[in-house]
Structures are given as structure tokens and as C-alpha cells.
Length: 102
Image (cartoon, rainbow, N blue to C red; front, side, top):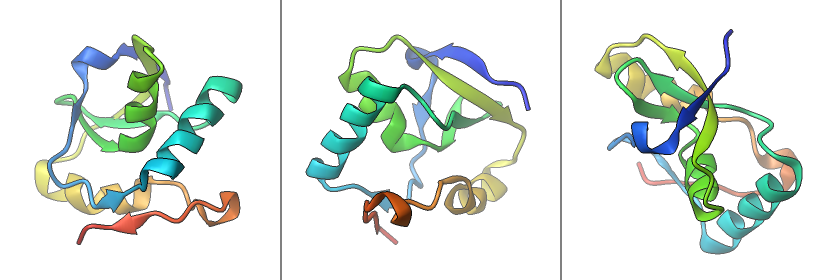
């Protein structure tokens, strides 16, 4: 797996992002990235669509980061939507409770 630094301007959040994060948890994620940096890269389809790491990308943009670590995958659009739910880390250990919009 190759991790690349990619401009946030080249990344497009997917329309099918199933996760919701309350503002206070996005604040906590933003502080965590500011203090520790990225632990998990953003997962991006070959066309630039984010399929995992929407909240990490949003937190990075809040911090004014111009690039983020990215792993590219090659999935068709149908498979990308299904893969997204499996690409996000389990946040229960951190105490974060992410909601699902679908």
C-alpha cells in the first residue's frame, strides 16, 4: 500500500457518505489531528472521490492543511459506495459515536 501526500483541492467527498459526526466530535478529531497528525490515510478512488476518511479530510481542511495522506484504490462507483462502510476505522475504542445517515 503506497501512501501519497495529495492536495485537498484534488479530493472530492462522495455523495454517498453514510456517516454523520456531531460537531463536538469533529472538534475532537480536529484537535487529535492537530496534536498527533494523521494515523489513517484518506481512502480515495482513482477518480479523486473520497470513499473513506470524509471526517479526517474535513478536519484537515479546518486546520488549513493543503495536503493529506491518501491511499488510492481502483473501484467502480457501485463497489465504492459499499466499500466505504468497511474502509472507516472502528471508532468505538476512541469513544466517538458516529451516526449513519442511511
